[in-house]
Length: 319
Ligand code: TXA
Ligand code: MG
Image 1: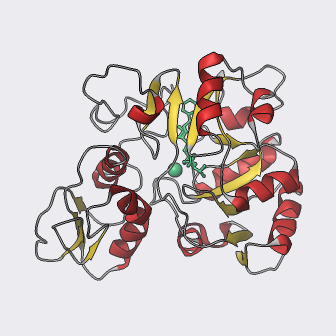
Image 2: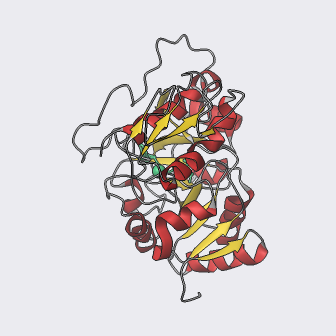
């Protein structure tokens, strides 16, 4: 490895070979997925996993998502019931994370699950993460590639800005297509809203009002993890964030949507999928802008708008 961290390599055979070497040596590498960039390490090696926590400055009670190439690999790690298998069949590879009982013989480092008896697992669709999984032949633990509590990274530059020389290598494959972290499901419960909506996941269910963790306020004291990473303050820029703004106040950088133009717009046409893809990039730009505060236009709370509002509520929550 070059002495100057991090090295940024464009996606390709050479980059994947280098990354696989770093991972075989117990290191971690930033790699894009279809949702956000992940910080990947060998999930079977506790020292490698400890390196992820150290680079992110992540509280160790917050467990990580494990990425594998296919359902067969997932079944060697977690116990699937018929419902879980059906969801996997419909949505993998893709932005769906299943929380399932951990198999006793899974060989996953205890640090990955932070001592829970369940594991969060997904089969990613992005070519770079898939190539890395194939090259390493290992399940890869990979949280979002940003400093703990900070804004998630949808571009290699965001990773470098957030983690800098704490990691050796970033594989750059441009902006991630989805822009928002995977939907996390346990049984029939959505623990973290994401690109796949409850309606898509469970179309047969009669549903009451949507409840997300942003509605239920800050989590109780840390330690016991119910839906861990759903901390009240997360994705947070370094400046105050005001939501549901239709006009910029003095000193505010306004992130618009639809009819609210703003200094920039998540989607001028009011397209929620486009807004999700632009969200973290817009927050990074707002954070870097000269304005001392950030305002964000109202986002409709439907479809992937629910996930966008979940992330915005955490970005706006005082730390
Ligand atoms: O799209 C994604 O999911 C991205 C990409 C890189 O795959 N990863 C990601 O990981 O968002 P991370 O570590 O930032 O978020 C993982 C979330 C956290 O909220 C964590 O608490 C939760 O998954 N989690 C992990 N294991 C869990 C478990 N056993 N039970 C409940 N929640 C769990
Ligand atoms: Mg994260």
